[in-house]
Amino acid sequence: MLPWLLCGILILAVLVLLAKLFLLYRSLDEIAQQLGERLKQDTNNPIFLSVRDPHARKLASELNLQLKQLRCQRQRYRQGDAELKNAVTNISHDLRTPLTAIQGYLELLEREELPGPVRRYLDNIRNRMEAMTRLTEELFRYSLAVDRQEPVREKVDLRRCLEESLVAFYAAMSQRGITPDISLPDGPVVRILDPSGLGRIFGNIIGNALKYSGGSFAVSLDKAGTAVFSNEAPSLDPVSAARLFDRFYTVETGQGATGLGLSIARLLTERMGGTIQAEYLEGRLAVIVSFPEV
Image 1 (cartoon, rainbow, N blue to C red):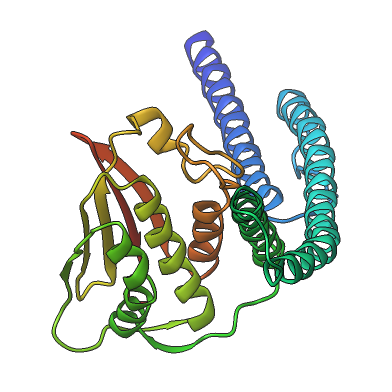
Image 2: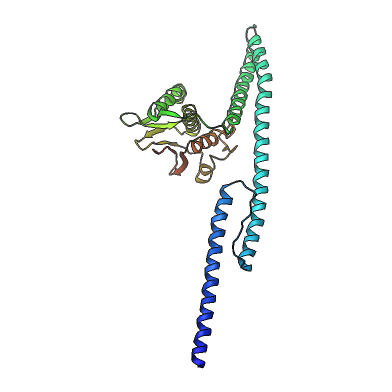
């Protein structure tokens, strides 16, 4: 009789343990599912459990506390980002008015008969003013780029857009004595993208390549929708190359720049479902942007 009683107690204990394991697994599955949903969605809903296991509930409570702190941090980040965007927009607008006035006065002065030294001073002032105007325009474009409006998508030929972007920089390349090595596929490479945003991406990448180029520049595009822009970049290193996409980051040789060109390119690329990255190897910088076929 005793052996049967012990066997019954043992079987009962095993069943209780199995039931507890089942409830534990169920609670962990619920936590995992709801945690994933809470991280993807901006919601105030906490994690709820259908089981009463105290350890699982304690874990859920701690996760809810962390989620609440994460929501607060997200709100602060969004508020700060919105304030920065508004500040950049306002500053760029405020700078345009005096710059336009300065340009008008310079044009009036240049019409006058001036001594040679004064003429040189005016040339220096105009050069600085044009640099300031470019920086202001870049700030303004950044404020437009960070606007989270859905881009207008249509059929775009990557090959043709890249050709047009290269032609737009032909004069700048000629002035620097750069003959680009261009490799393009036969026929169009069609994607559903924002044509204006795509042109800005290619333009910013090419402009950045010319800025840091040591004398060579190569561009290639394949049928898979991957474009590679490479150039000699003796002023860069792997650390600075990895930071080129950071907002407002510039290297020492990047005079007259805001550090927003590649940041805007990354923002627009990712918004259209593409990828962009920079690689630095043996003195050459390569910026790789890809728009895979969906």
